[in-house]
Length: 115
Image 1 (cartoon, one colour):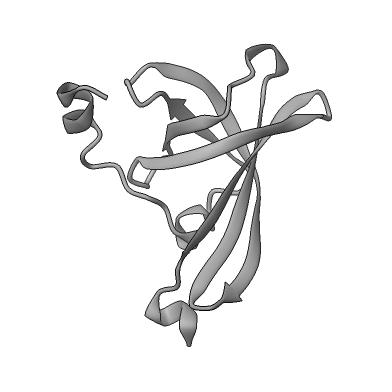
Image 2 (cartoon, rainbow, N blue to C red):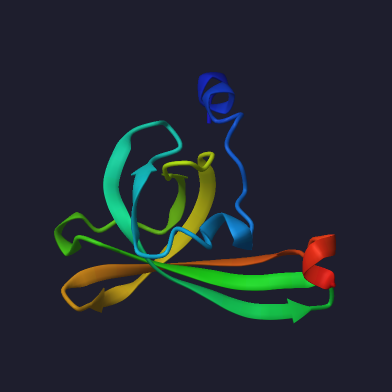
């Protein structure tokens, strides 16, 4: 990324589990790291994979149009009422006439999550 892209992405967060809790069944804006709009994706599911060795593992499943499939990589997710967030996802195939994607997270657990 060039310096302009770094500055424009400086307020973007890395999302934790709580970020996605109220976004299931919501359409999300998607843009490239360079700021170009991409096809929106629907947040299909939030899958809690539990805690292990002080890390919280979870995944998020998204779906979007087959005729505008996105490649694996990092994008910026924009949702009403939430800060923009970096998400790395991978296409997982076509189901129900939509392209599906998955983002997998393994993050240090917060103090609250460890209780």
